[in-house]
Image (cartoon, helix red, strand yellow):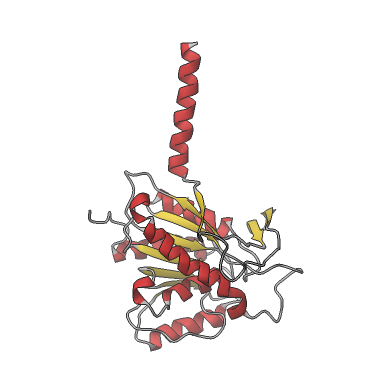
Amino acid sequence: MWRMSFAIARAIVLTFVMALCCNAQTLNIWPGASPGSETWTQKERVEKNTPLGTVVFNVVTPTLTVYLPERAKATGTGIIIAPGGAFVALAIDMEGHDVARWLQNKGIAAFVLKYRIIEKRREGIPPDLNMDEAGKYGIADGIQTLKVVRQHAAEWGISPDRVGFMGFSAGAMVASAALLQQDAAARPNFAAPIYGGPFGVMSAIPAKLPPVFLAWAQDDALALGAVIKFYDALKSAGYKPEAHIFSAGGHGFGMRKQCTSSDHWIDEFYYWLEAQGFTRPAPK
């Protein structure tokens, strides 16, 4: 009986420890109905085992999934991750949870943002999609998420002045909108738009932007023009964004391995974080 009780207790402890390490905690980012979409009635839908892994559609309630590193590894840096999907879907694994687990293993707290996207009524991306209109809900969610992460900074063991924002494709538009806010104090402390950026009207580039990391492939048939336009706008405003331009990889390479140099974008991102001082433990 004692042995059985001990085994049960050990299993409970192990489960608790695994929960702490994997940090599957998920929370809503708004304290009630999300502003602007209170009348939405579409039902969220999840498709698994697609070529992009798990994909989410029709998000009405935006959430944040928290991945905290082991305390012995923790650097005090946190990164919000916004997956892509043209604001009609979210590639939540390949451009979200898989990235978060990689960063978590490096001692970086990661937060996967499942932001609001418009209802998907037919296959493919609508040819007349207005990205500014479709993206306004996700952008509002991204800006709110920065506030939420900083509010929980002490609880999650990160420094409020070491919060970055990474986004992929449409998620990069969310990240870039958070970066280009007029309120400098509300911006992330660094940003990493990956094969994306402002896909609609290019915002004015404000002063005092934090460090920026960009990565894209030369054979990106979908977002290449918008990415280069964003890069040129940053350069024209006097900034020197870190830019990694891979010869191949296409659009949406994320954490997918294709035997191209783009397979290693996240390693390059980590080296850049290291050069910025974000991989060393934050001063207490």
